[in-house]
Structures are given as structure tokens and as C-alpha cells.
Length: 243
Length: 304
Ligand SMILES: Nc1ncnc2c1ncn2[C@@H]1O[C@H](COP(=O)(O)OP(=O)(O)OP(=O)(O)O)[C@@H](O)[C@H]1O
Ligand SMILES: [Mg+2]
Image: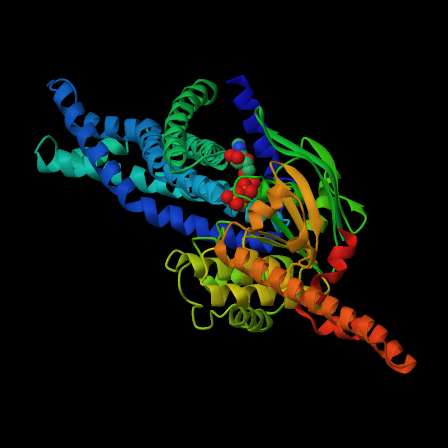
């Protein structure tokens, strides 16, 4: 465990030694960013809309009390989704989507000697392959999380108003109540940290694959599992330190 | 020139290379010959540093490589072209992008120059028109050829090919062999080819290293290889009937020639001619030799 962590740190260091030219890395980063964005936007949209809807319905169910104004439902939906659900659930979904594809791709490149082919050309394969993925994830994840926040609040609105739990006016009053801008900043910080954790852990796992197709599958699974654990630990640490 | 000295490599307790040394000369096609699983690919990877040998050293044109500083290793590697046994094409790229890749990364060529070079290399391996295919869509033999095109695209100083013509039909295989030899001589580069194909040995084996169970058992050229008395090597060469027949024919021819020569000698001895004629007949064998089929094996006989 500790040894793996040490190897992980060395791996991260190797990304920044003898980098390829910025022009090449920039192009690769844009490619990766587009790939991550296009591949995950739909799943993020679906998941976050439903998370918002479910949160709204459940809060409404629990707040079935005449003394509490109905707008509190909107307030609760906003607080829960922005602070926790949008960044964390989105990241966990992305760990499955992006993490497994990073680990699978790098693992396949490793066992089919494509990584060796890069090395033999005198290219730092770790930096060439992995650095753009990490940077791209850090760029794209916050955007996806902003989208997720927006859609989960929209999902809550739709669920709440369509089911007749509260009026549109009450919901909007609720989500504008005691708004703390720092919560958005905090959520974005979380998304950046999670992006780094997912992309680097999955890259590390995929890059160190050896053997055959079976090991590539195992590496994908391990990448997702480890990323999710890292996200949850990171979530706790960030909440403790920054809130 | 690439020199390797006393290379050892074991995986766990399985010894794969057990003290291999040798000199691979510039401008020659050097062949690593050996049965499947003897460690040819591992040796090739040790030379280019993809596998770190447990012991031993490699120098490229006098520059120490194996444990040298990363910058220096990187510098040398940028002069290496390599074909992997499994081709190792980048499967997210098209054929053309694969061949262009080292040009884009390692040279300052303009887009136009790169395109010309890519077309040229693909033509050399007989793949004109396959530019836009994805590398996952082409056959195994085509992958091999794209791999060769990618290896030779930047003008490399050292060329390594792991079984360049396995999986190819005899005609294409011959073409690839000839291409590699041509490039080697034309640009005066150091080429190391891993093979177990006797056709390649006979066609292009300027220098042959025979590996057996992790050791170098023999080295020599393609003329000498037919006349060794190392059992393992003979078993390897004459495993197929064609080679045995070729050897038999050669031996028979040599036998016939010797008999003829003896007969002539005898007849000459029986009827001594005039002094001029005697001088002429004495000079005859050296003139005749280059024409005979056995002539090519003559130097080998001397060294053996
Ligand atoms: N990464 C590795 N880990 C463990 N053993 C290995 C590894 N690579 C190669 N070997 C072992 O080293 C031996 C030599 O393998 P190598 O690939 O060099 O054979 P080869 O001479 O190239 O054979 P072929 O002609 O079939 O390609 C084999 O027995 C193989 O099992
Ligand atoms: Mg091999």
C-alpha cells in the first residue's frame, strides 16, 4: 500500500521531467478534453437531473409540516446539490466513465508495446500520454460540475412543480434564500481535486499494466475502485479543511 | 557500430540471457538467429534499453548507453528506428498518422515534406493507397509493413527489426528483406534484425549471431553458416527439407568437382605434357574456382 503510494508519487514526478514541447502537449490536451467532454456530457446530464428530482421529492416527503414554508424544499435542494451531490456524484460517475477508459486505453497501449514504441523514439511516454489527460480532466470536470449543478436544480424544479409539492414561485424563492457564493467555489475546488485524483490514479493503474487482456480488464476495475475511494476520502478531507 | 558486452537478464529465477557479447557493424545487416523463446526479443529490448539488463553494457558508436544519464540515452534513442514483433502501431491513428508520428515528434519537417516522406515510405513497403485506413483495420502482414515504414520514416542511424517478415508471403518477405538491406547500405546505418527465417539468412545475412538458450553459440556470415559443425546450429538450419536438399546438392556438386579434379590430375600425371602445358594446368584451379558452386563457401572453409 505504502509502496504503491510511493510509486504513484514518483510516477507523478515523471510526468513533469523532460516534457515534450508545449505545442504538442497543448494539442494533445485539447484532444483529450474534447474526448472527456463529449463522452461524459450525456451521462452527467441524465444523472444530475435525476439526482435533483429525487432530492426534491424526498425533501418534500420529509418536510410534510404546516409550520415549515414550502420554499424550504427549494432551499434544501440547492444546498444539497451544489455542496455535495453535484460535484461528488458527478465525479463518481466520471470515475466510472473516464477512469475506466483512461486505464483501459493506457493498459492496452502498454501490453501491445505502443508505450515501448514511444519510449524507443526518445519520447517520455508518461508525460506524453498522461499529462494531457490530467490537465484535460482538470479543465473539463469543473465545467461538467457547473452543468450538473444547473441541471440538478432544474430537475428539482421539474419534480417539485410537476408533482404539485410546491409552486414555481416557492421553489425560486427557496433557491435564492441565503445564498452563499463560497459554496460554488468550494464545489469547484472539489471538482478540480477529484479530477486530478481520478485521472492520475487511473493513469497510474493503466500505465503499470503488464500481461494480457485479462490484466487490462483488471486494471480498469482497479482504477475505478481506487478512484472512488480516493474521491470519498478527498471529499471528507476537503469538507473538514475548507468548511 | 553497436557493441554489447556480457548481457545478462533473468525474469525471476528464469535465466533468459546468459552473457551475450558481440559487435554489430555499421552498414551491415546483422541477424540475430535463434529458435522461438531463446531470448532474441529480450536481447533486442535490452540493447535499446526497454528492458534493463541485470548485468552488461551496450555502447552506440562509442557512447555508453545502458546506465548513462537519461538525456544521453534519450539523445541516442532519437536516432533509433524500431519495428516490434507485434508491430505496436498506435491504434488510435490511421496508417498515415502512424508513419508521420515520428516525423512530427522528432524532426522539424513541414507538413508538405512530412506528407511526401510518408507517401515515399509507404510506397517502399508496398502500401501505397492504404494511407487513410485505421491501423486496427489492416491485416497482420500490413501492420508489419506499416511498422517498418514508421521505423524508417525519420532517417535513423540504428535500425532494429523484430521479425520483419514473419507473417508475410515469401514474395513480400523477400521484398522487405531487400528493402532493409538497401536502406542499411544506402544510408550506412547499423541494422539488427531478429529472425528465424532461413531465407532471410541466405538473402541478407551479412553477419549472423546464433543464440541458443540465452547464449551466443556462433557468429559468422551467410556463407560460413552452411559449413559449421555446431550441432545446435545445424539442427536449426537443416530443420526443413528444402535446406537439407540444398545442402545435399551442394555437397554432391562439391564431391563431383573433387572427383573430376582428381581424375584430371591423374590423367595429367600419367601423360606428362610439355613444360608450358604443365604450367597452364597448375594455374587452372585458381582461375576455375570462382565459377564453381562451391566457390562461395570457400572462405568459410578456411576460417572454420
Ligand atoms: N516480461 C517478461 N517477463 C517474464 N518472462 C519473459 C518476459 N519477456 C520474455 N520472457 C521470457 O523470456 C524468454 C525469451 O523470450 P523472447 O520473447 O525473447 O523470445 P524470442 O527469442 O523472441 O522468441 P520468438 O522467436 O518466439 O519471438 C521466454 O521464455 C519468455 O517467457
Ligand atoms: Mg521474439
